Structure formats: C-alpha cells, structure tokens
Image (cartoon, rainbow, N blue to C red; front, side):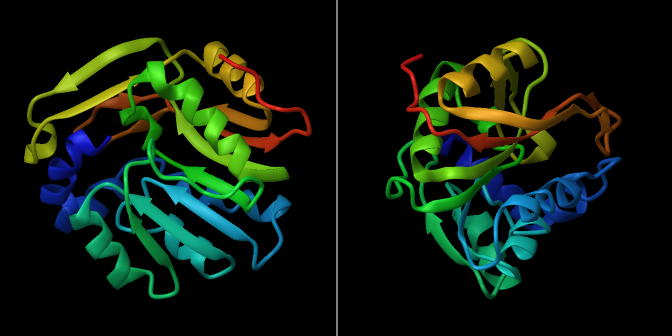
Length: 213
C-alpha cells in the first residue's frame, strides 16, 4: 500500500470532502458496531486510518486507539483532527502488534489497495493480534477484481484496487480464524457518479488457530 502513499499525500487536504460525499456514507454506522462487542478502553487499531474522520475520531473517544497509515500527509491531518489518538507511520503489511493484544482491528477502504495475493496473510496477522472474541471490522471487495488501476485517481496520482468476490473473502477469513457475524454488500455512489459495491463486515476472532492459506 505504501506504493500509493504519495497519491494520498496529494489528496489529504481534500479527502474528507470527497469521502463524505459518498452516498450512503456508512462508515460511522459500521464502526459503531464495534461498540456492541468491545468494551470501552480496549486497545483498538485502525489500518489505513487516513485523516481519522469519522472512524478514528469515534474510536478514539471510546478506546485506546492507534491509527496506522503509510501516507504522511494523511497522518498529519489525522493528528490534527483526532487529538486523543496515537498514530504510526507504517505499511499495514509490515506493521506488527503483540499476539492477543487488541480488542478490535478496523480497516475500511484500505485492504482493497493491498495486492489480493497478500490478503490471506494479512487476515492471518490480524487474527493473531486480536484476543479471542475480538472483532475485525472491514470493507472489502464483493466481486472478483484481480487488478483495477487508475493512473491519476482524483487528480492526485496513480491508484490500484484489488480483491476477491464475497464467497472467497468469507473462506479466507474463516481460514484465518475470523468468523463473520454480520455482513452486507452496500451499493454506494461516489461523488463522480461511480457506483461501487463494497462488502462490509464484522468478524469475530474464534478460539481456533489460523490455518495456512
């Protein structure tokens, strides 16, 4: 994901205006679902935290929150907008946390930038970071998409998206020890009129150990 950090750096000053104009914007509705299973004060990590709005701000008001992002420009915005959060400049594929240390991991519109052949390993890492019963809240692809590339996304620079269909994602998550407890494919319209169908989900860390993909 760090390959596209400079694009997000360029977009950082105007990203909130663009992202909040998606219809419907379901990010806060889905992050609030974390609160059903995770008690206040638990340690929570957001992968690809962006500007911290609205997800990081909500999490930091209730949890011991750490936001991770590969874009210095996005992190600069997040540090200004989420005073109660801690932030780490890192790629989500290389950052590490202690085994069983986290109550939740959140990743909205971020894992879709990681090459899909790496998704199984990333899900496995996330599962080990979570304590048993901890939750993973994410948005992933709902369709098979090996490589979608835009050379100048939103006028900020190159961007790539990749992912699997819903059924494959469910299988990969299960193998990682992450059991989906709630999910929905949501039709959303971006400000430029592009229609997308993300797979939004809440998965719980089960007691069994992750399997190899």
